Length: 67
Image (cartoon, rainbow, N blue to C red; front, side, top):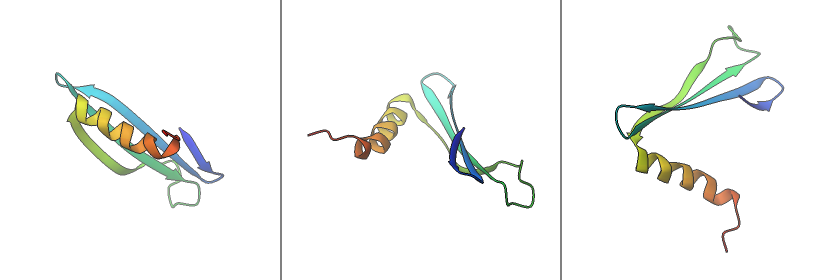
């Protein structure tokens, strides 16, 4: 779980599926929601392992000074 703020949390799960594929699911909860315990799917995708690695690198790249 990633606590974004006092009332908003993200849940990120990456699981292997089939040979050489990975499934990424990002869900959220908000304390002020009608049902605060219910997770809402924000993004869900299954990719070959190499493409999932590329996606992870693309997400992390701006976080680091790679010069």
